[in-house]
Length: 79
Image 1 (cartoon, one colour):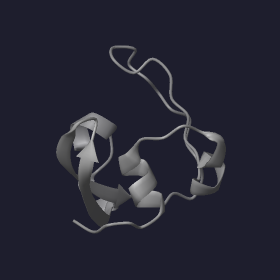
Image 2 (image 1 turned 135 degrees about the vertical axis):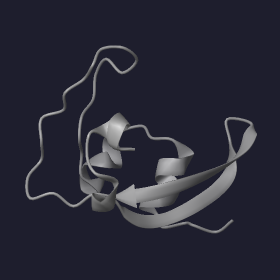
Image 3 (image 1 turned 180 degrees about the vertical axis):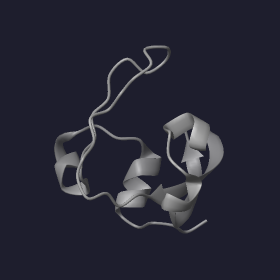
Image 4 (image 1 turned 90 degrees about the horizontal axis):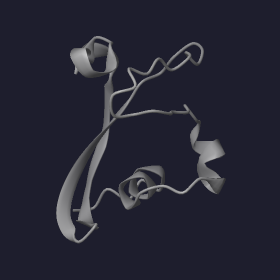
């Protein structure tokens, strides 16, 4: 993970797993949390992700999200 998100893996805290049928196929998703003193500015490499926004769970109410994100926010971790 260090290579993909540019931080040591030990700073990520396991936050649960969820499984379900999303986008027509069964999937199992593992969630991790990162607690920061302040929000960093995203730095994108412009290869696959061309825009990003870091948001708190409270800000996500008006943003479309995947069923996996909805499961995480609702702490619906049953599999």
